[in-house]
Image (cartoon, rainbow, N blue to C red; front, side):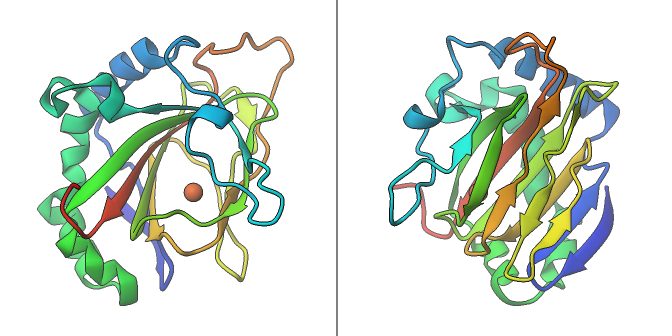
Length: 205
Ligand SMILES: [Fe+2]
């Protein structure tokens, strides 16, 4: 785990998961990457344009609490307990403003987003306190794009395998279009994965 950049409105950490942790995450992602489990935009609480109500994204999503009755049975939930570990808590302790909420987090909503050719997420804000995005892809990487643009100053954070990005959820952000070869088979698993945690201060309702 190494801090790549940290500013007022975002934190980027590379090499977040170790090889054995990532191996377990992939076992689960491979199982979950399935058209019958993943939800299209109209069924996955997508952000919408406030004026036109048009859905702002194209990707597929799985809410992990809909899959598991017990979080302890999921590699992903187990591995991402690392988010609340001492190393990351110490890093965030030194960050300003809304990052201070990190130590008061009461519950989270966890989901996987999977992007393939021509998928995107247009500018929006998340309805949470802090947003954690963890990115991963199969090697060799089979797509271009998928970078994150964040904040009013439109800073671009490059998509990178095994990268974690955390930011206060009110920051406007977007994911640029993914480009894959046309020969890609849908749900091939060669696309761009994000494991997202929306963090909330209040306890689970
Ligand atoms: Fe978002």
